[in-house]
Length: 176
Image (cartoon, rainbow, N blue to C red):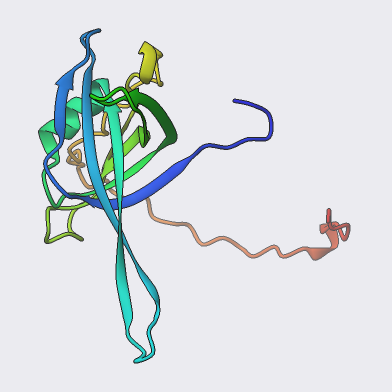
């Protein structure tokens, strides 16, 4: 990372369509997501606020892309972290075009589809970035271990202790 710079994006939004998944020439799985985020705009003269929707193009690589394909669908609420990247490409007429997208390095499933709000998140990160660079390791979602059955243990009978509050031994020096 260059000294004194930050390129980090965090969004929480809903998928506008099912993930578009393909295999890159290198064999790496690539998923494209279109994620919508909403915010309230300024009040109009009547005092009403209009909701503004912003669409974000996101790209995922490797195992993260495979999990997105398996578990995400249109309307899914998802938390994404990544970085902005702008690509230059040429259209059919030879004109230069630019696309800015979020290269995702962490994804968490936040809830169910349109119903939203329910369920906890499962997180994962990693995948490969553009050009085949490794974007980090993949963290397997944590699995809950079944609670072990414990036999009730007999608690030993507590012996009454004599109170020996001898404050003369207390050090008056407070370390702050």
